[in-house]
Length: 237
Image (cartoon, rainbow, N blue to C red):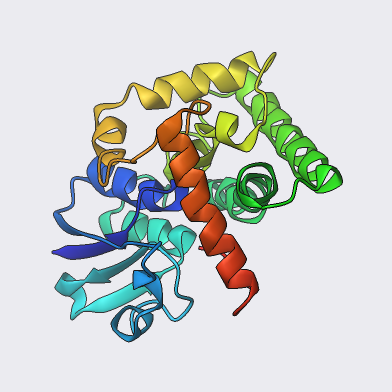
């Protein structure tokens, strides 16, 4: 059995989707980020970085794994699924996984901060992160022009990138004209395991579309976490 410590964010959904795709039994442990659950000592013993997601694999003596990309690799290697075993195939998956970890996630995360959450609208920062997000989407679109999936067969690389790309409207990043990216986005969204993973846990607000009252409340909560982190440890949830 695996314990999944998570919340309804792109990084959290990366892992719940992978667990559903792999058919592994797991227990959901939802953290309230606004309440600071991720900073409590018992959770920091599992994830020293104080972020979600993290897992504890009780089949391996209670082995903890934190960082979403590391969790995806661990689960793929544990099961022998969603990542090839040959050196070149594995490398290809890892390249596109690192593309998400080092590019798509950080750039969209910063776009969210400055476009949605930061109290002051600093337009050069908004423009910078949205433009870089769009550039990275164009890289994905170029790859998907001649490939059904990012790295051979459907893999953890697709799951990781998709969990962020699906929320592009929340970051204010257009995918107009990126037809190959749209095809890939829709194909993954149609997978039953993906649909189940998005409900583990279900989001309180739909990050795939623009605002309503629930979205504004969500933004206010996130804004308080961002400004609170600025005044303490410079971290963002």
